[in-house]
Length: 221
Image (cartoon, rainbow, N blue to C red; front, side):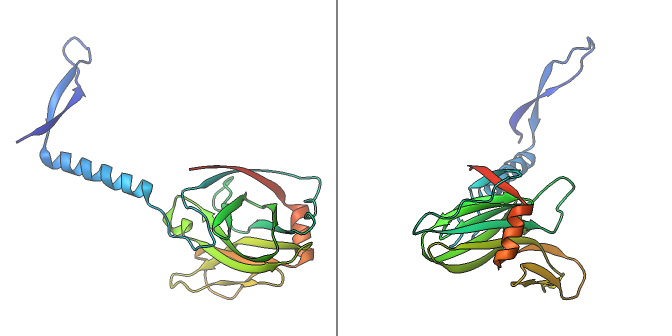
């Protein structure tokens, strides 16, 4: 038995395009309904992120521009962190990777391409998260974590570097040099890129701020 009717355009002898009602088979109707449900579920699916990150539904639209002045020093009794993206891996021509940064369970901003932003924080222990913002499951689950103890009056530089890769077995091909904030090839053929999140020394951090662009953003869900 046929259920559900739909309209279809057909050409008659006059050359006009009247609508004709045709019946849809039950099996086709079921397939269409299932496809719609799967799409809805996938659209609402959230990635389980570590506690240091923020809500996966929050996305960032990032703009970057060259800044002529470095970030102002932290206010009295506060510390400052500069969160940097170092895009060693080109995702696609003219397409830069957006990295979201979280701290203590909430997003604090994002970079796009080789860029940075500064954030004032209270002294004490802070837990940081860097996450590749993407609609692709393989990339949106890419996250790295670190933590530090902030001291009033000090400036800390942290870099999310897109450049480490894994081979087909999941083994790291590159490993982080936490001193220089760079990735060192330890052998193997290129695989899927991942984020490495490291703290930079002051000289490297200042150079990144001088050479990279300043990131600003707005959020949307």
